[in-house]
Image (cartoon, rainbow, N blue to C red; front, side, top):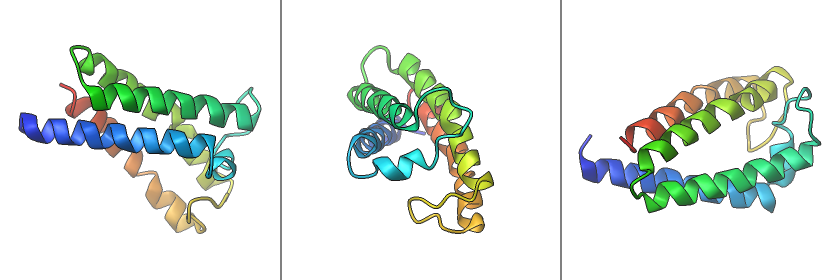
Length: 125
């Protein structure tokens, strides 16, 4: 991957995280609650708000780049790993959200999380 491609990927990933974070705090809040596993010890709404704030912060840091971009990429990859159980929970509990209204669609979505992890790591090296 060229440096230009890395920068474009990193900025797009950052913008996507910022958008997702804003949607956590506003118009998609109810749908994000459907992804919070029942075993999370916080209220579902609090979990959605905190993860939204984290996504805005991570997205901003990714988009801006800077001398700590490699560390931010590792933190973003860890975040994507940490929220993956929410995607699994949505699938295993048959919860519809974001147009994922069948088990087939919810299952297919699981394969996008490794791509996000890969992007976070490989656009910040």
